Length: 256
Image (cartoon, rainbow, N blue to C red; front, top):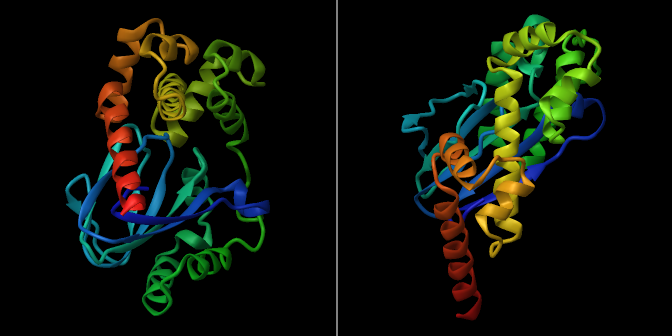
C-alpha cells in the first residue's frame, strides 16, 4: 500500500464474493498518510490500535461505515496503527441493509470489533465475517440488473453499449443504480476510466499522457488530466512522480 504500511488483502471466493470484493488488514510501520483510490463502492473500517483518520476525521471505535466512494480519500495513521476493513461490491450495501443482513446488525459489528482486540489478524477477521455469510438466503438479488450494468462499466464497455446489453430500459437502470449506489451510471463510467488510466501510468511509466488518454477512452490529454484530478485529487504527472519516488526509496533500502 505504501512504505508506511503493510497491507494484507484477501479476495473472497464462492458465495462471499457475491457481496464482498475485498477484505483487508493494514499495519503501520511509521506515521504517514495514503490516498485511497475511488471505486464507486462502499465499505466498513475497523480501527484496531493507534489513531486512524479518514479525510482528516478520526475513525472512532468500534467501526465506521464508508459511503459510496466518489473521489479519492486520504487515510492518515499513527506509527502503531492497525486497521482493517471490508469492501463491498457496488450496489450490495443497500441490498444488505434492505434485507437486514446479520452482518450489519449492531451486535454483529461490535462482536467483530471486540474479536479483533483479542486476535488482530487478517485470518481472524475473515473468520469473523464469514460467520455471517453461511449462505445467500438473506439477499434477494433485486439489484442483479444494476450489478450487471456496473460490471460492464468496470470492463470499460461504453455506457450506451452497456445500456443495450442490459434487460431494463436506460431510465430504469439509471434510477436503480442511483438508488442503490448514490451515483449515476455515467459517474461509474468516469470512475473506471480513471482507474484504467491510473493502472496504465503504473504499468507503463514512460508512456505519454496523450497515448494513455487515447487508450483509456478520453477525448484528449486535457480531458484525462481534468478527470484524473477531479476523481483522484492529484494530476497524472504528480501521481507518476509519486510512483517513481516510492520505487527510488525501495531501491535505496534494498541496496543498503
